[in-house]
Length: 607
Image (cartoon, rainbow, N blue to C red):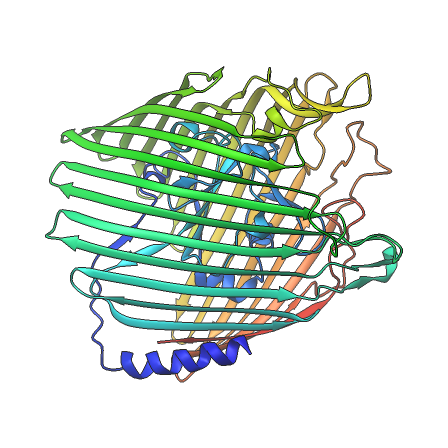
């Protein structure tokens, strides 16, 4: 029904768009700090075309295409990332330049962020608190939209039908001329999610989920210097948490969020100023019995002003000044959180120096003033050396932090108002070699975290958050890529490897849900309008308890996906994919196996 409706709307726009001229001009990217971060840190970009072809949700995209470990409580359920041996709370989710981690949990649930409403996903391992604030200790995941001028009219319809009663669809349309740009998109995902894993005597009962995302973008420019933008996103999602017995009470979780940004960008000669005013709202409700009124919940509102001023002082000197004000208010339901509030003001400066074409330096400092407790002084330093066309060396080090969340401070019973923020030092050294059609990179890293916040049982048996751990992580991330075209053929592959040793220095044990090794990659071959790909992921031994129990650990596993795709009449694409081709039994969280072999068919109409 959804696809038929979208097709009718799409048909109207296709007729209209046939008469439009397409003239590519300015493409505006809202997260301008990401460009600066990429100069001294490794960054991986995943295009919309890529994740439409190979993945149904954001968890799958990150699991099979990046070094990030994804802990998922069953397909489509609560899902959290781990960068370089850190936790989900130490990962920043950034939507168009704005940190959107939950103020209650201090993290983002990957499966409640949508996927098809974005133009690209960017993964940046390594610290970034000077640019992106609290939570950017292990890395950041950027959900980006773009607005273009002078591109005429375009529309795109995507649909997917998959195993377990899964329907995934999205529609995007855009119109732009010299001074005006408008984007509208809508996506809907639903699944019965009733898969079985006989080897584990497991059936994913009460595992259905659904979510809808609506996004709009509006841009207007006056002359060549001033641009005004409005970006909005609305998300509505429902997850029914799996049960292990038919006699168990069925639960569910509902979340709703809205994000709105008004953006003014001024650019002229040596000056660029970017001002954002944002209003963010998150709302969640938990139902201990899905047929009864909610058991707990909460609503939070964030008002934010973010100033980003860039000045090219001289040919090889530049200054970037960042200022941000946040006013956050939260109200819980049956959680002990009543009228919680937080006011944050931060100021940062980044000084860049490029003495030659091959050498670049950047140093940054940031101070946050946070209501009711002291935040650390944050520092960063990065350099890039490009002595030859084929070789690049990057060095980055920084001090980062995470502020306690509302749940950490105010949840009752258990909240702890005496918590200190987590702080960390990190360093990474990245080397990249490009030779003809090959690209090879290796990035050793080191992270030292102090005052990690953990919820632990007290003497009376009540769970409460405390600053306990000192964690030290080190390892290496490596990648190799190849891309070759000749006549009507093309071949490309990307393979990545990550080794991570993340140790609690008090117990000398590896942290829970941090695999020692991960290998991932995609190989693709195409001939004319036909293509085939194979996508694999190996996950090494992963402890699930703090005592390194092999009995309870997730044993190593390898998962292989494959798919074919073709283009018909230039604007019409179709694809078929087989997930978990070898029927591997595997878990990313204890007791919640993910599906065995399953199938999906998708189509894409793009004009």
